[in-house]
View 1 (cartoon, helix red, strand yellow):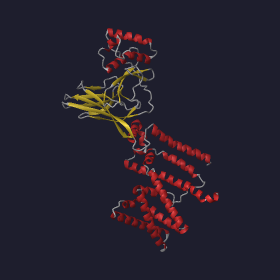
View 2 (spheres, rainbow, N blue to C red):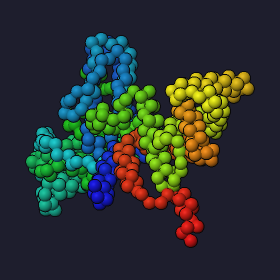
View 3 (tube, one colour):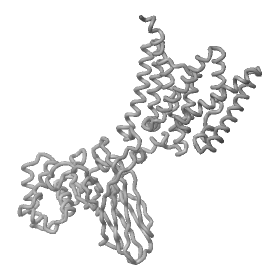
Length: 510
């Protein structure tokens, strides 16, 4: 393959990896750093009822969990808390929570609906749900005449249904109402009653309208009161009108609770039941929240990811995914810097062992075991054993030396020696054998350079592989391995001078 083709292939592979990472970061909100936290609100509805001892059914309209149902926010978890009541979710002009019991104790009872809510700035599609004309209000003759008078005035300043609805709402905004508005608002002082009247009155002009209720989450006051808004259909989508000033849209940080045309709470055994709303802010782990958000949106994305594996397997992959990173570090040191090592991946395996013993202790144990093994290996050279028996004998002696170091460190009160058995035994034996062969063939200088090069590479690889932000990135975004793969393809065609060779031929260059 030509270099241009290789460059194009590497670019495509890296683009695929970076695109997957960008999607998970920007759309699914997976964090780039470990221990990152996001704000979570615990939203609660508390229902207090007086039970009469007989059967009872409680229906509470609750927020919908679909995308775009709560603009600006997303529900990542919810639960129902009750005693003696069976509970479930249903659909009745919106999403509802249902409690039911055939018998109950005669006493006051409290039931709870709780939801975990987070900010969600993802692109929200417009609400294009089906429009329906509300039933017209029941009015006496003076009220009907007052409403027609307001309609005639509103007609002069509006060009479409949204403009008509906004101007109609403004006629009832403020403290100083006109005579007609005062007549219509008599016995409708409650905000919800006023909003429902607006929706039904607009039905007389064939304008689809409904009432949406919610509360702001940004303020520090935990106790909340539902605030009604009017939503009007313009022929394509639902638009929200603020009843206080006729402006379009919800206020900032407004959490939409319900869009139902029915009462929020209905209790068959206690029509006067009380309901209270509250919202408490807190901080939670960003990765956990991202998992819950993705599970709510589309659980299939998590089913085919590392996050769906058991916790013990995930822990193994957090370490395993760093092996390519260590191998890439070794590739740079060998092909670009020019450091000599024993074998290709032996330094990476040694670096994995350092993950258990820690760096300083691991270096001391490595030098101790290899040094003692070399002494024994030179002694065995005089016996003139064949290759396989010699490797077997070295392996036996390495295990004995590891056991001796562990016992000695335990008697001296050092725990580090207890981790020495975690070193790959075969790798240690092969390191000793390779150093001896290099010593015999190329001299002690060459053998020591390769030995210390392997140790230095293992130390650097360990420092990179044990860096928590990097471990987090490659576990949460494993598609970054494609970027490493692309860089490896590019370096694989490099045949120029290594950095150590620049120093070596410095005098020749002059």
